[in-house]
Amino acid sequence: MKVKDEEKNIKKVETQNKIVKTKHENTDNLAESKEEIKKDVKIEKKQKGLEKDVETETKQKEIKKDAKIEKKQKDPEKNVETEKKQKELKKDAKKEQEKIEKENTTEFKPIENTEEAKTNKSDVLVIFGILLAIVILLVTVVYGTFSIMTEKSTTIAKGVYIKNIDVSGLTREQAKEKINNYISSVIPEEIKLTHNGFETSLSTSQLSIYFNTDEAVDMAYNIGKTGNIFQKNLTILQTRLSKTTIDPGFSIDMDQLKKDLEDISSKLPDKIIESSCYIDGNNLIITKGKAGKTVKVDDSAKYIKQAINDLKIENNSLELLTEDSTPKEIDLDAVYNEIHKEPVNAYYSQNPYVVHPSENGMDFSITLDEAKNMLKEEKDEYIVPLKVLYPSVTTNMIGTEAFPDLLSEFSTKYAASNKNRTTNLILAAKKINGTVLMPGETFSYNKVVGARTIQAGYKEAPIYVSGRVEDGIGGGICQITTTLYNAVVYANLDIVERSNHQFVPSYAGPSRDATVVYGAIDFKFKNNRDYPIKIACSVSGGIANFKIWGLKSDNDYEVQISSRTTGKTSTAIYSEAYKILKKNGNVVSTTLLSKDTYKRH
Image 1: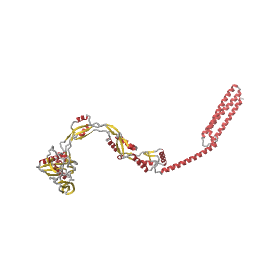
Image 2: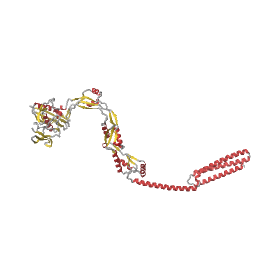
Image 3: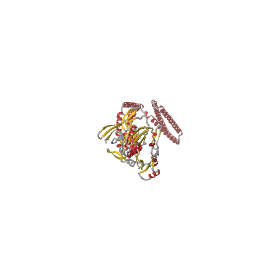
Image 4: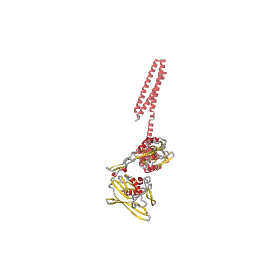
């Protein structure tokens, strides 16, 4: 019975093998019908299946062989072993068969119902192709329309900003107007600068503030308008998705800004006060400095520049950047070197002709160490006495040989019998005699002659006072003024200040005189020549004489003075005078000197 059961099992295994073999054959046929499926992979797997079938048949033959042996032996114990072995072989064969079926099922499962699958796949491909074509058509239409619109656009692309100002959809002109209007509204004509309650203003019109809006607008306009059509459209799409901001070029006059800030720093109520010094008469006044605030010029300039560039000036006001500062220590050595000066003697040279005037020197009246000890005291102000150092050879000491040419001469007569008046004439003339005027220098009669006082040696003599003649200190010196005035006109020098007397003087005709009053009326003239001049005068033997020496040039003229009375009344005389310039006997010009009014005696 056992042998029969074994034979049944063997037949069952063989039947299963045939089924498996049939499936392999069907599978191979289906695999061959697929034209573009992986043939090499399928063939390889088919070979694996056949190899496994051979192994199964070999095992079945071994089972039959063992069964025959079992029949011959008819040994119960051996039969048990044979049965056991057969079970193991069956088990192995079953596992192998399940493995083969699993592999075949997994590999070729999608191929079941092949014709239906092929039909479904074909339908799917057709539908997919139609949808793809529609999508491509829509994209092409949209893209083409978008391209045409952007290509012909005369406005700025969407999403473009200049200084955070949206200029999307604007033309160049509209964008420029919008930007310029915004900048003008944000930047005031004056920026208020504050510091601890102190306020001042900064004029922006002086700073040459400039935003290059033209360039910025051109850049904005060209976004999406350069490159090929794909590059243009890509740029426009990117700009729409994330905005593009353009910062226009910016400039400002930093030198002027710093100069303005330095000026503001000097006006702070709590500003630093530096030590200083100045000369007052014969004293050097030194004032001690005080600590205080100063504007941080460089930092403030950068801060203001950035605020203007960013267009962020809230309420048109900015806070000044300041810092604590202490004054510099007084450098008395430096002050002394600046003050101290040795006198310079006057001299002249002939070739070329140059007169070098004398110069006074200056020094401390105390030693430098004494002055330094003075500064050790806790005081706000220090006074250092000074002394003038005079040259041994002054300009007035230079002889007439340094002034080779006589430019003019004029004389008036006086009554030598009037001793007091004569003394006054001599004193005034001595003050003037030898005076040298450098080119461009102005002569002042009152400054040179000085106050006419008894201490100076002046005497009482007749003078004009309030329309009448009476004695006064320094009477008669106006004759010296008049004589000098005429000599100056004949030298063709510039008259700066001149006044006539109340009455026509006896020593000069109408409009030919000049009067002075110390502290009130002066006589001034200027050396308008290219070289120095020297004034020489004398009072002797009833003649007051003035000569002006210098160096003649080709530009000199012959000078004449023409004066005349233009009218008379019972109380007044009217006159005028002219200066006439001649060259080679011909009149070159006629210039009015003065129009005067005199009282009648």
